Length: 95
Image (cartoon, rainbow, N blue to C red; front, side, top):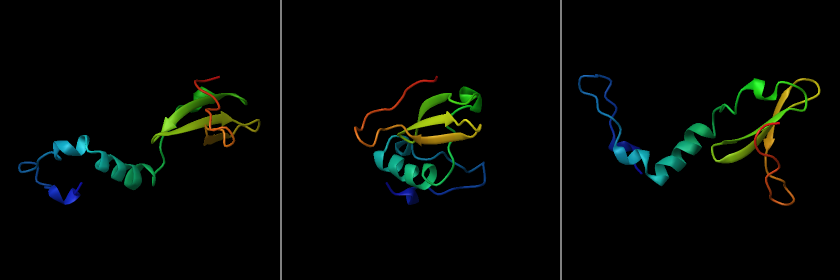
């Protein structure tokens, strides 16, 4: 996918949308994952989903399974939701 096949036009009277294929092209998706999602903070969920120490919720961010939990000290922590030894999902949902 070549992003040069679209020219940004700030004048709204002459502007156009991005090419339709950009929405479905697998290479464009991979490029966006690398350029946008891998370099910026992404929302995992609501803090109230893990309001108390020991609470947790599982989610997916940019295709990666994530487990978010509230520590005894009250901090939120996020980890990979895959067991390093068995390659299995650690948890799902909320609890």
